[in-house]
Image 1 (cartoon, helix red, strand yellow):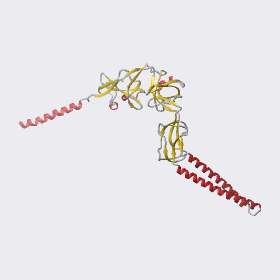
Image 2 (tube, rainbow, N blue to C red):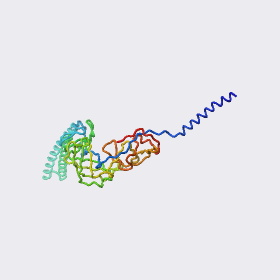
Image 3 (tube, one colour):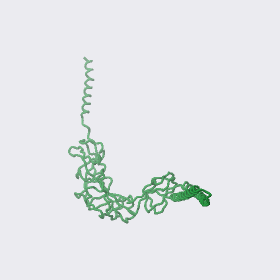
Image 4 (cartoon, helix red, strand yellow):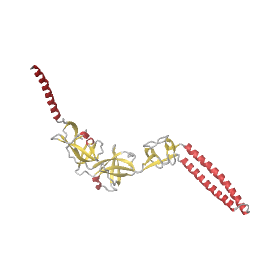
Length: 363
């Protein structure tokens, strides 16, 4: 009797533990803690765009002959003037080419003198009928060949001399170095790009504009461009170009505003802001959310919108444009003011997933 009770005791305990395990497996997962932000609007008299100052023309610079670079005198961002030496090739090999070409010229001239004497003698002998016409013709042909050899040798000497001058890479115009491709000690071939030189006199303010706003733009319109790091620096430019193609990812079109005689502070690469009432927002207010809330899928933008009643998330497609501030984006459509969106871990959520808001921030 006691042995039967001892057997039933452990069996009962195992059944209880097994039942407990089944309860855990069927229990729904705990809500996930997320960071969120509230979509807010800002009043705006016009759409504010951020862009950069870019050169209108950029020229690749290269040596006209191959060789080894022995020195480079400029770095990226250096301003240069017309005729300034930017880089140099090793002149030793070029000097040997000049000497070889000079020797070829001297040799061909000596051959020409001999051919002239031979041709003169053969003409005299032919007149006196002491030499055949065929011998005279051979001498005349040798003379013509010698003259051609002299011209070829002189052309090679001229080319070698010009290549000697090309050992110095000089700036063709005033500008700023925007790219460096090779360093000292490297071997370069003729025509290989060594530096990129941008023209400082012609600069553009380049912006990416929402496609739906392009109907309000016309070539020749005047716009005020301000330096983002110092808004007191302003300059009026003229819209000179609208890109015919739309970016497939951002759905933006690139426009270029000519900055004629702009101050030096609007240097190449400077971040500038364009604010204009020419293309105001449709509602007069602009919705902004943190850039970390954006989930990119198949060239489209999505956000996880939080349902406050069920505390679940819904994946919603939105349309955005780049804001002058990198930490946030402007929402054109798909989101309403006051809605909460997830701002962290957007790549690991699932539609309908239960969440708890750990912290909500506002812009």
